[in-house]
Image (cartoon, one colour):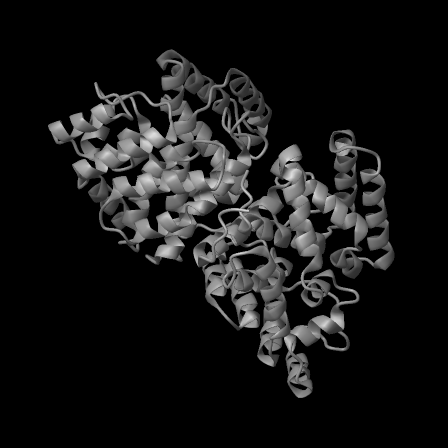
Length: 292
Length: 292
């Protein structure tokens, strides 16, 4: 536990590095990593997005409110730096409140409490800005309740019903991992941070990320897979991850993780929400002073 | 030619992304890339260094003088973010004057002229700070003339002889690619920038970097190889690069570049100075608005 500081630039760099380390870690079954691209979205698009968003992260670390507008600004800035489409929408949903919380904290206990405070204190305006960001990022996510995401009618409904961003997350929490993080005090994010810090000495940074990714995937149905395919597919992928992990130590299962990765990539099955939580966990670890 | 701006944050992010894209590009014969690590220095150390140095880059973009101190600060900040030792010393030697120049410019012609101005207007204090940075970074570089790099005696000699940082570069220019850049108006840097921008449409960002790296290596003996081995070895490596490039288009020579890479890595031959100039070229390209 060292190097903890509420310096906004330090916090913004921890968030940049979290995004860059996550996308670099390989093999990360089904997702883009340093060795795997999709047709239109490539590894380098994620690097450019993570670098480009710096000023919004620094601004978030100085901000006491406006989480929705900051998410919106982050999506817009990311898009200016690369032509690969949506790269970090889900990651920004977690990073922005965590970065805002970090700007007020110098220790881990404080970070958890402040992040929860940022989430619960959101406004209707935050919900509207989130919808605007969503609409621009063109992400596939299951709409919250009966609200069609990304059009003006939904914004009218949000205003009419006086829903805050936290309320929207409450509506989605049962089927959306990110919404669940928002409403349960970022539980899995902090678990991932602990897991990465626990594994880094033995496994090194890349393998600590891959192993934590596999563990998270094995114990949670990925929202992105569930939305793109269905709940059964997400369940099946989690079970496969679990079976592989049970077979032994990393060196014994490395080849199986590679095969699993190739299979998912061939099917277009990408556990994107799991990756977003890994980014959040890496941010917490780096903010807490993890170096390698 | 778009997006050119003298906003210090934009300039600093262009420099961060230049370092990250360069180290990611693969296969880059002999050097660390996304698929190759050395024993103590790894891909992730370069990523962390590039992210961590942001505030010094932003400060440089706002600075009119003090290039030596800024190089010193960049080396120190890079070291705080990773434990892999020297990663970007040579890159900072080129990036800091270019970033300072970019802070005063909104077009390419201006950038070249201003960079030359930053170089020629250096002071004795800049030379001393450069020596201090060098000593801390623990780089293998041939000492300039009869000055032993990195100890107090040399600093005494610099003061006694009234040598500026530009003077030191003049002393080394005949055998040091980076010093040559400092004294010839960053000629190869701008050539690399033009080459990368020329190739990106056909080849994509990764291959545009690899091809430009091969071309630069084929036409210049790498200083780092020359210092670690000797001039003959550096010459031999450049000739091999040239022979490979003459065999055809990228798709035809990709396998040969891979084999060349494996050979150099096995021998511990890393063309580090060539990589530094590629970073500088990438910075110029991104500053000029290159996106992908």
